[in-house]
Length: 351
Image (cartoon, rainbow, N blue to C red; front, side, top):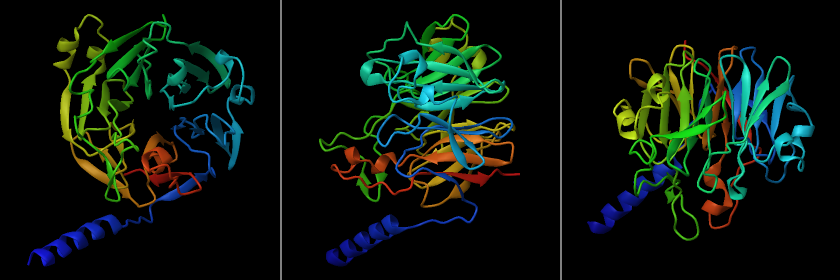
């Protein structure tokens, strides 16, 4: 009897691991060979931008897709392999287009303690300002995502390294930390990610772990959403509280709302109606959290391997990257299990 039960359990496990998903709603928006797309953002006029980390084969840090062609943005000079730090992309991590059609490029290189945020005006295609985070604890920080509050002239950045939200004053260039080392910004102890029945861990058995990572801001700048990757819960706080520098960490934490379990998530984006789109790699899906508190699956497809960054177009589509982080050699005993070409996809938004 024990042998039979054991075989049944193994069979069930294999079936779960072998389960595949397909959706006819999923469309390929672009392909990039062996260049890994990370950031995706779309302007109000449906200009699509994609960013890449500086690893080989490196062509560009940031591009605009124009009539199916990939054009270095804002120009070739900014996309050089080498150049002046304030005029060349170091290692683009995230991009975001705010409600004023300003493109924000988060360009950190934590191993060298270098960080900058580049503001590009999409009307003139010119760099307007470069922020260098002079007062940031650069030996501890690993800035990951950025969102901009155009009403309050503040940028909110997730910092997994410091388990905090970094708030950048866009006028003064000064920063401060919010919600540092709070339960809402910390990875849940022992929480591991699993793919194909294998825990995502390095050769020394260290599991993949990220504190506060994915963030989003509603189009009216009222709510800020955030969460660690190693957690099932989604949180939000009103930006009026987040922007109040007089609040202590404990006082601010009282205003944070726990919206419940929404699954593992890497990136988030808000639409004009206030829905929050969440990527989910463990079940190959994109979901959205409605203003009524419902969690709805928008698309589920086995091609969605570590869906990461999202942008919403005026054409009625959600665009997003698939970074395949879980397939990189460091998480697979030195073997590269990436499926080429890297792609970004799009799917119709709900009506």
